[in-house]
Amino acid sequence: MRTPGGDRGPRSLRSRMILSSSLLLAALSVVIIAITGLAMRTYLMTGLDQRLDALAEHSTAAREQIGAPTAGLPYLRAFGVPAGTVGVSVAGRRGAVRHAALVDDSGELTAPTVRQQRILALVEPDGHRHTRDLPGRGTYRVKAVRADTREAEITIVTAVPVHPVDHMLGGLLAVESAVAATALLVAALVAATVIDRQLRPLQRVAATATRISREPLGHGAVRSLERVPQDECATETGRLAEAVNRLLGHVENALADRYATELRMRDFLADAGHELRTPLASVAGHLQLVRRAPKSAAPQAEYALGRMESGIGRMRTLVEDLLLLARLDTGRPLAREEVGLGPLLAEAVADARAAGPDHRWEFLMPGNLVLVEGDPDRLHQVAANLLANARTHTPPGTRVTVTVRTDDAHAVIRVADDGPGIPPDLLPRVFERFARGDASRSRATGSSGLGLAIVAAVSAAHGGHAEATSEPGRTTFTIHLPLHPTGADQSAP
Image 1 (tube, helix red, strand yellow):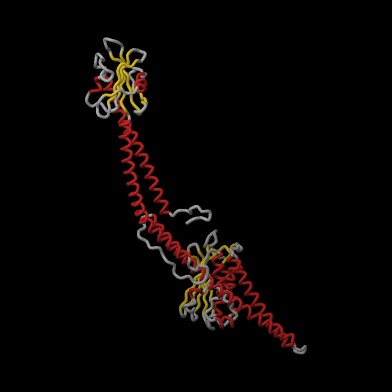
Image 2 (image 1 turned 30 degrees about the vertical axis):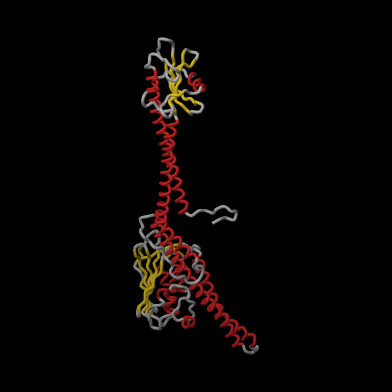
């Protein structure tokens, strides 16, 4: 892939891993070759210097240097003297060359050039080894020693070539380089195979994520998302696949919750619109009736105004309930004060008995004063909604029993009736907004479908929760609220 500017785009992880491992191996090979070459050169040069020392010591064994210039250095004729070795004998301190000889490739002695002789004649007989470049012959290791003769002061200079060492070292480096290049190529192929195998689970993760990214997750119902195949969880890729699958599960649950919320919101808006449309239509119809009625029809106008007031009251109640739920949803704090549940429930039962005289109402007064911390108006609304729900959805003659007690650190309010019960399909969502088993009956009796939703929301705002159980002949709503911090049980006055 190329960028618009012509440069190559970022390489894949596989390519970068192969390249990195190859570069690392190449660097290690270079270091190994360099260290090996340095050690080998040191070893060879040490051997060369030892041979030079032996030749120099052997050169002083003769007591006299006689004969022609190529025959006056007899130690060069010894067996094992390397080809290219040069020997020069210098008489006196002025450096006059007396004898000079060079061992050629065939082992014969030849005369070195005058220039080569002059360079060697200038070497001081200090007993140390020196390095000199001889024209036409290359680099030499040179050592000059004094020889005792009867004729004059003689200095014998011996020089051995360095090029055999360089040649041997170059061959060694060439072999090592070839072996390293072959090993690097094989290692790159093996690394590519191993990396491909190790990255296969990661590629499956990427492929699965790519396919999931093409799913229409923005709206509507979401089908079950694909999962990443897992081989083993001990490796990093295995743990990554496990984490991705767990993440996909969370995403799937979140999308399902979102879709369910969308459906509930649609139902909520539809029910809210229907609840508001009915009283609005009633108010508009009676308003038109009042406008068209003659002045003499006072009773008819009075009836229409009464119906309008009733519709406006229903709308006001519905709007207030919706506003209360909205405030609770946003987490607005409620009033906090000490509230005795006994007197509060007694008042609520008295109000319910007055509103529903055809039901049998019972309140079991607790033997102790049950105190909670909360908003008395909202808690009274909870009790009133539970009792209104029992009155509205049970036939006349139904027994409704209200109890309150303490359970560990909670106050427990229970409202039970022996009515027909809640339909099984409605029970799991009985605390949802506008949840009704019989919509027509609820509207006929004036229920908005928000009473139990307010019960659950107010209970949660006080740090508690609401529960409901039902079967034919026994329906129970239970509210759990935290007790007041100053103490749960206090003697009743």
